[in-house]
Image (cartoon, rainbow, N blue to C red; front, side):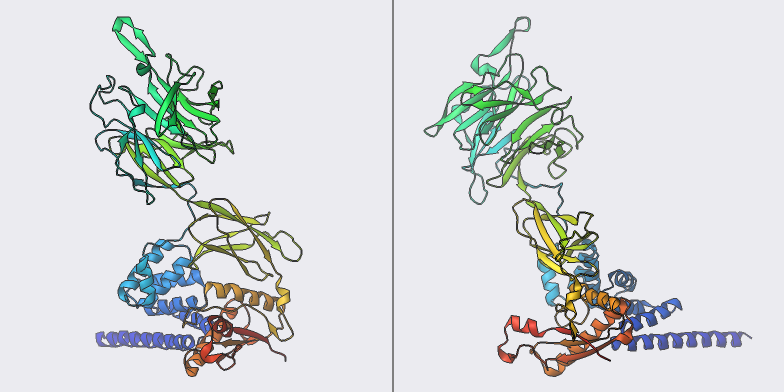
Length: 623
């Protein structure tokens, strides 16, 4: 009885294996003849019978890949790669992941592909820039941070501002000779300068001796023309203090002073009338037109420990202090204001929600909206403060004690802007909503896909350093691509007018743009799929229409190879249309190779000639 049972078990195993191989063999024949739609059905039957292995998963994935069915291709590639596959499978999975916007995982698959085929040009391109991850600009991240090599390391350096003539001024406690501050047991602050070269390097700092006293001097601000400086100074140096007899103390406050450049030296130093022995006035910042001076003070009628204020400036005449209000100031400490050329106020605050200690915020005076934290690219859980930016020279600086001592850091502005697509009907000028808009980068990667709203618009945050195109498609309209104009930070509106597709039908054919394929490949690409969707829409609108797909190559390569390549491409094109719900009886395909050139050029073809010869035709078959 045991022998009979074993025999039956063996018989079941053999017949099951035989059934699986026959089913897979049928699917493979359909796949090899480019009948991907039917091949998918056959492979899915193997899966349903629980007979599939990783080979079947890979074949399913490849079938969907050829038809540009990204979602299903991704699903089956993932299952196939549970075991090691050939290099091309990793490459194709990477392309699918990129189309899904999953660039981190795509790069990992390309890493594997590149290790397996290091001499493949696609692998070389990846290895040249392995961390390339296209994505929308992070509008919350406006600066990249780098260190500078002028910091003392042991003593405080902070409050750096860069003049338009590339002179970097800052304050430091690095001069250890002389008196020390009794409150901090540190040397007094002095003003220093360093010359910034064209490549961004900073010279060895030099003390600005004519501005420094034996007490605190700085921080400071420079006028746009570099001829006027406002700086903070301890009142002791001017004899401006209060005596507390019982403690034998002389208590001075910080005040703001004005200096002018005279024959290469700072002189003509004058105290501002807002200075007081009762409160501190410090951290000055002058507007680019020289008419408004911002500063920090704990003067009466503020909102917190110290606030940001402003006064008008007209020569040596100054207005009354004005508090900037609750959109800037809090019940905590606000200080170190800096007003940029584009009217953005940067300041440090301990009273707003942040990452810890002092954080740097910005307040757009043009919009008068809420203050915004500069984010964790700039701010840490320590004190971050004294932010300045020179928009003309495109460089900023700020200070932080994240290393344990106050140091200066470089803040490199990230240029980004919003590109806004406005989509309308070209004939009627009607606004088009629910239009599919794809943002594509210079490497033809899909960065993001969105739909237009009821106003016919959608927008993307993009980087100034890259080139972009938006591809716009809607059922019933011709797909169109539009270049995004270069910008230095200003928003860009792209007027994307779409043509209705009915003009594409002639007596003899449906006129589509070229269906692009990868070099030497026959799988449908993203751009090809978007164009073929127009044919699908037309055939659904005209249910009696029958189409012959004729695919042509250029004159390069051997005639026999070109013919076979064009046949594969014609069949892939037909299969894509069938996969979108068009009856296969309404379609036929024929590869023409290079037998019917549009431009007769042969050995002396230009790139443009070749592009015109590489084409697909969609001929209407008359019964």
